[in-house]
Length: 116
Length: 342
Image: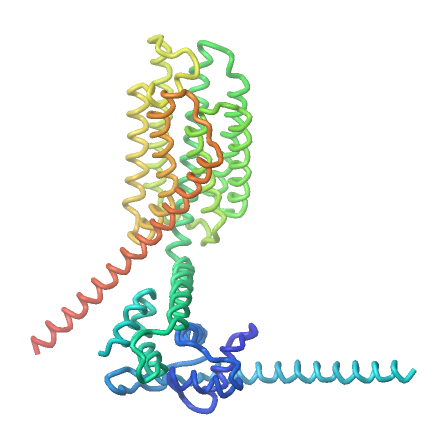
């Protein structure tokens, strides 16, 4: 398990694989949906991220199939991958809640200033 | 295989072989799956993305390659050899000054500087042999700074090229000792016999040099600094240097293959600069009698060091890939033979 914060594409890939094993092109499409179109990874960047995640032990090969004479390889989360994703999701949730709390306090303070 | 797939495969050849072996087929599938039905050529975006990631992959592969324990061992061995050779060159300088003092007393300040450098390198060798690598590295960096400061102090343009390789040898030693390695890894890997061989080689170089200087003086061939010019070296000096080189090379070539290749790669920039220095001394120095290393020449020397080192590291990687493939081929042949036998 890695303790360093993971980057956005890696977080999205782990999130996409949390539901079911997926192959390269399936991941590109799913990442697009998960990020509301903000992350449209190209194949070079996708496989660079997959290689890093595999080396870190967060994902592994689930199975392979041949479609139209071409290799399609499916990846899945490892146990460490699930733990890392859960920890990262919790961390991001806490950060989002902290940001929202600050925003609420800031707005309340500016309203009080205007009233005064 | 259609035209688009062929073009993508050609682009994936930009990646390191390790990456291609693992991902090429599925990357082609992903790229073709994402293409438009009528698409014949890779898009500009995909081309740029593949080029950028292929380059990043090469850099990552090279960086990962340095985590190979054989590099740490090679640095330890290189640090120790370089320290011993530096000590040898400093003893050799003292021997030459002692010889020159027989005819003149103009070399007092140079002699003192030589003694300071000898003392520091002696400390480096003692620390590197005894084990405290960090202290040895600190002493080596201090020695390199002393080498540079004293070379500048001596103000002899011609000597710059002659002495540059010793500064680079010192830098190689200090850098190699700075890289973390197991306790006394250099001593363990070289072993007593190779260390004795290197020591004997240095002794031969020192004796040859001193004998050459003395014989030159007795024959009236030398009357000062000309004795330091490589082209005026006495046959005894050349013989001593040849024995020294032969002994050090023997010690290196008998090392384990993985460490040996890396030690040679670490010494490659030094050999390139030494070669350049010798070339310049022989073919340029006598034309003008004054070699000044200006900015352009410094840049050229820096590039020589960088290009030689990168080239040597790539050659090591290429050689080991080939050995790995040969081993895989042999294993496949053995497996075929055993299947046929059944």
